[in-house]
Image (cartoon, rainbow, N blue to C red; front, side, top):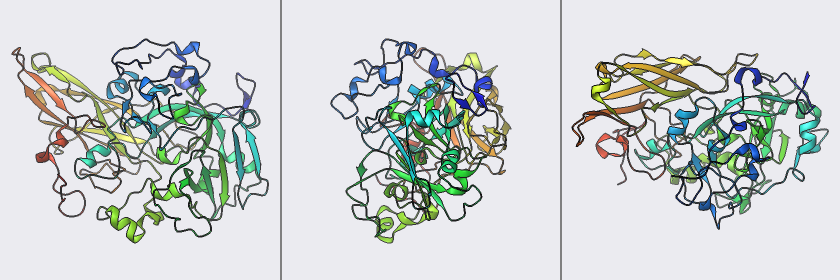
Length: 503
């Protein structure tokens, strides 16, 4: 063990020397003036002690979240409240591997709890725990070894709008920006469980439940299928994982309290949250208040009614009537293999006379799940008849067990003389499986990871200069644009039989 800058004894911190300065410790422009982010004064974050000292966004006035500092550049997807937003693609291209916390994806189901470091408590208990205990935030940060490493967090609804253009799901329109990578610091869950008396070698048939703080609506509208734990009108957000995973040194499940060198932002779980590297963001409970060890998977309402990959034949009515929400085999845990093109961005125009005899640098990101490294990224301009290898830019150092928790950036030098009407990208991981070519529609529109396609056309504007124009499938939220929004471009089938388009 070593000693951190605050005197706390820590494990070897994986990341400090490898990744350099934190994005969170550099000045980041905040745009939150009344012109909706088109202009605004840059705020020097180094003058603020914590994120809570930053200014809030005027668009949150008269909502329960009007006290929260937010960056006006974030793409808002669900109106004013609850707050759900993604990183603008142009900002992703500027920032690269690490995401500044103020530009990190936000997925909220309700109002952000107004919690305080000095009074928040984290309890560890449950029927299988011999030594239940409760921790203050100071105890959590001072009494246990700390660890630190980068993690990519992605909502499994990333790219959902592409699904909604096939047929409406029950989810809102995420684009390709519902993903971000930051360096998290915290305490390994394993250490807390061992302190509670759990044996790392005795994990079979046991689960660890995580419960947040906020009170949220009961989506089912009934008491649920568990007589001993009836659901009320309001439910906490929660989930569970096998105890074996929680105890795994290789899987590095963490209770985090810092992001990029700062305390967590309120939208991102302040004062502490769960980090399950390689899992979807929906399993990484924010505003964490309880950890329970159970002889069964959690009965929490949101564990069943959120983040499900149901078969394409299942409608909302059938899911409710036949109990599909309670089928555990359709719960999404691990992040899916995915890749996208971020540059050229949607609507980008490049003069033909400047590029026809040169190359264009394509850029994007790719990620896998479960700790599996991305092994290759490929580009096709022949609609899949021929694939070329892109260059992968690796920043993350694998953990001692060979697992990686982050996306990779990739680039490809495209000879514009060979540029045709579409550019495709796909990724592979160590399972030696690529992304699927075509989408498979599901009720929740999640795990959308089919091949990402950018369409290319040559336009001749009024100035007489021909230009390549690049078109992504969609734009996030209610923004117009994208080739997939045109009925003629929609797929005829997305899994099972013809699609019944809802006009």
